[in-house]
Image (cartoon, rainbow, N blue to C red; front, side, top):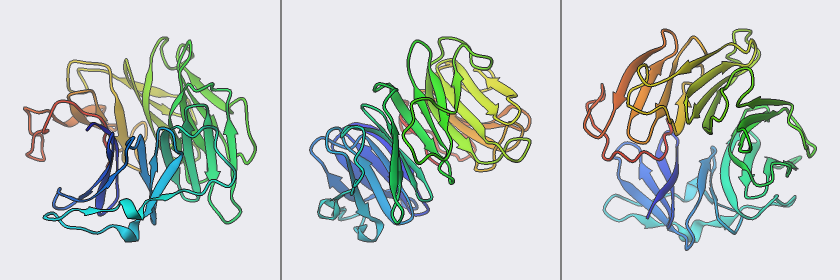
Length: 298
């Protein structure tokens, strides 16, 4: 069994794996429930009421959070609680790479394109297929603003603002080899904090790449790049990233991992606050169980 992604809330950690899903109690750190699914789940996201799972071939499944039960001694099989997520407006593909959401919106990256789903009532779907199956991660803001990563001759992070219509060209594209991100950089992961730009209107992007971490103020287009030396470890290839909800170019903390080091970085003074490896217990007093980091979620 391999881990594909995790998501957390105030009670549980939800793990999408190659054989289904595990649900872990956040306090005890023990598995209390599970779902067996023959092809596994590719991605997981939870809102206040549901947990959504992406599949390789069969669209999106979900469970209601009210169905979660079980114990450490007897983890409960929740397979009977698993339902098809209704998609009255369709999707670009039945193969799901990534799901993220906020408020009434779900962002979905499929094997063919990207979709924004507005939940009922007054639901709709808008989509883009010009990415030709080359989109990988996405991030949705509370107003429906939608970011997604795209590979190509140069990688990009594209943004579409508040659309209820299909689109072919993004409103904004942060392209490797442009004015901020260096050429030939792969964009592995993205986290966005809302209205944290210095102008109080625009957003701040935290981007984990194959060559450093980019923090971009979208209002002013000022930015910082973090490499090893500031961030712990010996590699500049960072695979996953997370940030405090109010973090910005000059405030708060972000959390980033290479394959074997988890680092906590202070934006205010561009310094390393803490780090963890399989042999180093950080301020929390506990080392990582292994050196093969797949995902982080705070």
